[in-house]
Length: 274
Image 1 (cartoon, rainbow, N blue to C red):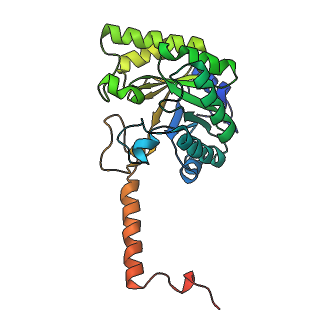
Image 2 (tube, rainbow, N blue to C red):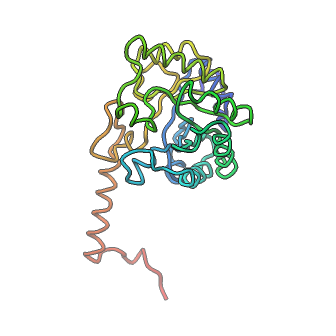
Image 3 (cartoon, helix red, strand yellow):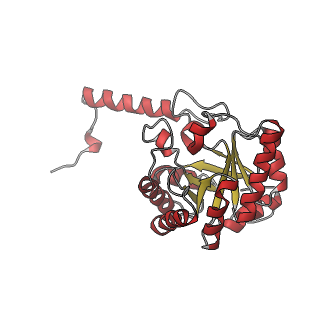
């Protein structure tokens, strides 16, 4: 969040997100799942941290986000929220914790807010999730909506496929975006949406749009941090690798193994006298 005409907030809050959109300032968002990583991103100036159910793919070894539980999100979100000083922390409501309706969604969101200290929750779906978003908003819980490719619905969508192509698809995403905004969503994540469609949604809704594989015209961008930092051998097409942290970590681990086996670690400076 640039400091062109306004001071950088000591703590990013809902009204700062809206003000950034109105000033045309790009918002930055990364996923985070633990305290050390969250602290690094917070100190780097990242505006928003998402404790995503992508923890299932990136940290727990699952092939989808579907197995992630609310208990797992709570533990990770508590660590992230407790480590930051400035960033706006958002926690995902995982699959199976809000689809039954507003009552289930409210119970899940209240638990997350009470037990973690995050600033908002995120849930997937447009028109089908309007009642849930409205219930949470009326209870004082900020909600980030998620449209386009929604990983929790990947079986119904046929896998990770671009959404919103063709007149019908584009119109549906636009209708969903307006609906979730009117229900009270404070921001909208647009995932794997054609750039012109995302640009149109960004123009017509009053809340910030955060793109991931949705082109440059969104009000902000989000990436899964392991993709951004180059932790693996593969990254999605829409994710730029801003570093090669995986290689650096591997090199450090190999050096550690070599020094322990050779007896050069620990050295005198790493031991205590009697």
